[in-house]
Length: 226
Length: 226
DNA sequence: ATAACTATGTTGCGTATGCAACACATGTGG
DNA sequence: CCACATGTGTTGCATACGCAACATAGTTAT
Image (cartoon, rainbow over all chains, first blue to last red; front, side, top):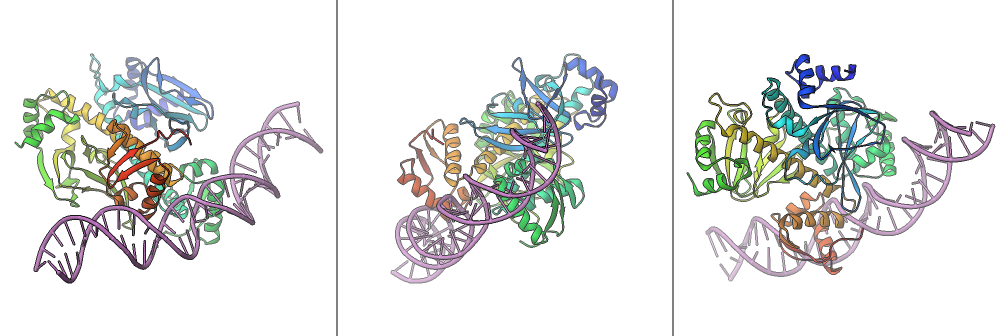
């Protein structure tokens, strides 16, 4: 068992209230798999038609919606303690068009989805904890989607940028943040275009609202007005 | 017990795989409350600091996010079989700023949130079904938020309108749909402004893409191009 | 060193759309 | 009947921003 995996068992919210020993039992009981992906590689959401929940134990996964014409919308990305694929559990949901992509070298632990919800026959003691944890994580995803909507709903680009950066700053607990997105990715996320984003960032720096260098931003004013 | 409530027990996905008798037991076991609201009334998400999950048994609820400056974003609205408040279950989530509003005269059944997840001591047989159903419904909310993002991420207003109407048409299973939103609400939902929406709808009618009268729309072309 | 590639910033142009102001229809209450 | 409110459509104006084209710097391979 890799160090990464042990670390994930100890810290990842999916394994809250489950001892390391139980985590190891669980690995076997549920038939989990650990797998690594290179940057930009697509991560399949199911294997042999079995739905999987992916636990991101290192790296970052972008969650993308593709419409029937092949155009992609960058929905959201996993945080440090992320999971993905959990939306696809519901039976009558069209999973079509959701794509998971490794945004950087990424390692994932897969858990077969149906085994989390249906209690196993030996009714392992950790099973209830696992489904509660999944619940919490799904709620987080929900919150992440809500934030994304709130950001992209702002009417001006400047407000979108501020909304995004102040949320990131809030999560980091600091006015200085290093974001996990490149400029083009950030533009996609904010539903704008790269050059417009560049332009507006320049303007905001000129206006003394923020300072930045590449992926590191510092908010200089609490955006109280507006 | 009202007819509405009985109908909800028989048809609402929250009560899938639970018999009517068990639903009635459940009402008492969980301490549910039925409550009605007038149009535009705010629906409190918790009562005496107990989080509640709201089951919409008639009417429609708008889910709105308010930022710290009081500006509102129209996140999404409940479908026929809707619930709301389910995001707030996760313990470490800031529930701040989520507002539920009755968009029309609406009746709601409240279930205390913690009693759904924690199995009760008499371990009622329906308890597992209830939490599975909640799972499905949360996944639906997730899908609804994803759709909303997909719609508002479109770059032109025309594409937003098409994305919205074709999703509605898909759900209705018909090219003719009556949407549950007024023009201003629709504009809010699409993150645009009412007059721009009006103008673009006129243009689209002129271009033969759709026809409409008030809240009823008919898609005339499969939007294949673009 | 050169070439090729990627990430970012810059700039000019055209237009979609936000905004405000107005018009019109319908409903409601006095 | 009038007064008022609400929901919708229309139009002119100004501008934020999408887009394309180019510039610059850093990185890697040959």
